[in-house]
Image (cartoon, rainbow, N blue to C red; front, side):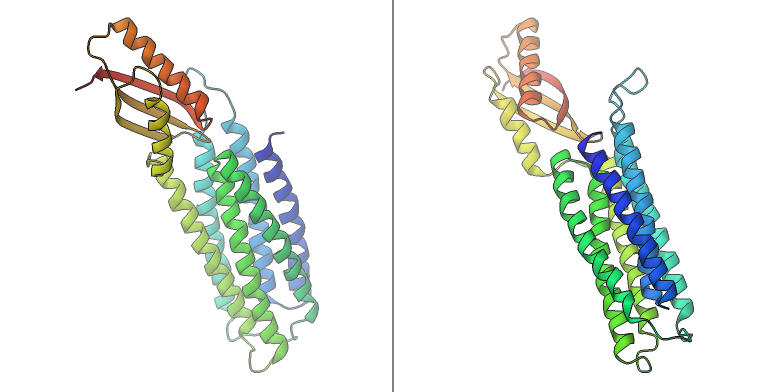
Length: 287
């Protein structure tokens, strides 16, 4: 199993365990915010499952019907995660608002704090490793899942504050626990919208950041015979980019010579930049 898939599988196991612990503790301990955070962790299991599926399908080689490969399945997975998180957050908000003014008859139990602290520690570690491997693999779905885990740390903190207020003064802060659940839901919606927006931009062939484009231009220009790079475009197709280059060369070159130079540029860019999957080169006379 590849690195990204191992990270997603480990995340599913950890999120599943946290969800079970928080849901049981929240229900038995009469805490709306802990139940909400448990439901959020349960949604993480499905999110990581989508990541695992997307990375697996995206690894399939190109075929006759998909000459650019299956990489965009991985980006589409990130979009689905964002939409799913937004829907889940809306449901959490609805349930929390419905409980406002109708606090639990029994007081919130003090032990519900421990699952939240455990979740905070585990999700902080997952966030660090997922962002690290998302940058290394240039994976949009893994990055989306990392943002999901980062927001989990924020939601766990909000739930801790809500539970703390309820425990400190149950009468004065009778609705604090429900408001905590509402905050958790809003956080989930925000991260869902962000993830959906970022991945939608990738599906719309948004150009990569300027630093990456500069690296492509430098690599292409370093090949002997290239007079300049007139145009340079790139679009992401999964974990890597497909590049279109317009090279300026000596106008006196033969067709064969310009073709050989274009081939050298293509190979050099792909060998120099491992995040480039393919390069399409158009040659035109300099000046």
